[in-house]
Image (cartoon, rainbow, N blue to C red; front, side):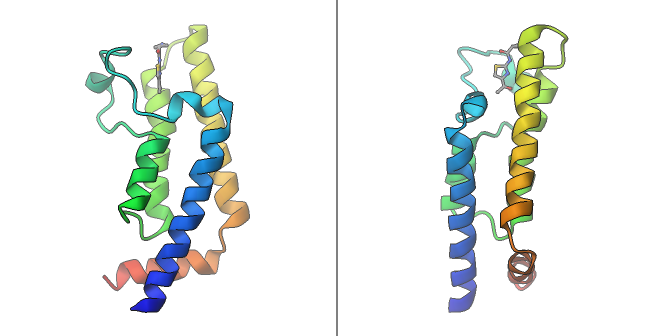
Length: 130
Ligand SMILES: CC(=O)c1csc(NC(=O)C2C[NH2+]C2)n1
């Protein structure tokens, strides 16, 4: 009912703000758009579920996330994919792995510091009621 839509609207606003701040951080530039197949032709053969910040934003606008947990499952793909695709000891791989780990820690810190656990519980109740 209306109260449920109010909760989901507030969730979308919170998640859009998280994405906006991540997208402004220069460390995360490589994660803002889908990997370009022309530049990285073998990417799709290695990574089964590509994810990036712009796709997360589209998913939010398409109302795919009813809980922060569902959002985190997709957000985690971004850094997990980067660690998987860049496993080598060469400096470029290490550089992007460092940024992937920074992304993981930054998202988790935002959620821990800014998401009210009672709010997430209400979102989970909405999910269970559907
Ligand atoms: C988004 C992402 O994880 C990404 C984009 S390019 C890249 N890696 C490279 O270009 C090479 C460095 N060793 C492979 N990783």
